[in-house]
Image (spheres, rainbow, N blue to C red):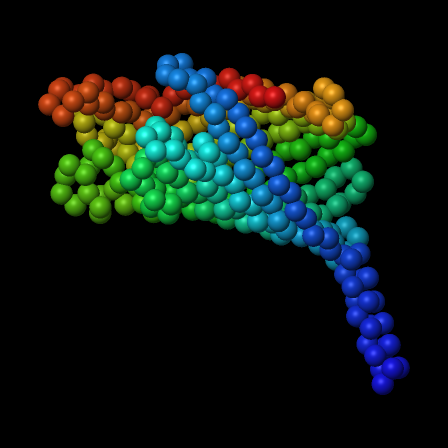
Length: 294
């Protein structure tokens, strides 16, 4: 009996030892507090909670994989005080499966599949899961990693499809059959190219191009009706990140700066009151944004 137990325990520990060489658990938690300053209105404080759990698998020498689940919350404090002005909240559930293939010491490939549940609350009357801009996103991307000493170049090509199950147009809700006519109007496919450059462990810079083609959403015209042209959005973002500035012991500062430009052909009709004449704005969703964070 003792010999049998010894053999059994030896087999168990051997399997654990082998598994420890081919896979490793992963967990990360971060809390970020930020201040935003709008062009008009009061300042605000944003809380970002992010929790990652997953595992890294390496069954073969040149092949490895990753399974990851991420829960992310962005918004004000989770507890809202009575009478406090409501601010937009976002909660995302992200599932990722990634395969890495090292072709050589210089070139490696990263193939990633992701599925994201994006939930929004933009008002007190919206519950989690019933938000107007809730979405489900399926994504596939291919990234090439090129290593030249301390220089790493990461070109990437990605495709995503985004479905909005709860979206309805307020303009078309005035018409009969709005649920049928607005179904799927925000659904779109997205093509993204990104080139990231890393120098050592401290410098990261990149440029990202993003094109969104909407499946059904037409462009609003000045007459208040939708034309035959479909909505198409384009964005360009340039960013730089520096890590490793030690302010004092145990405290590090990581400055991040980005500039984003968005161009959209979608218009907008604004009603000041229910009885006033509406004002039409062409290319209403165009904007530029400069972000600086520490």
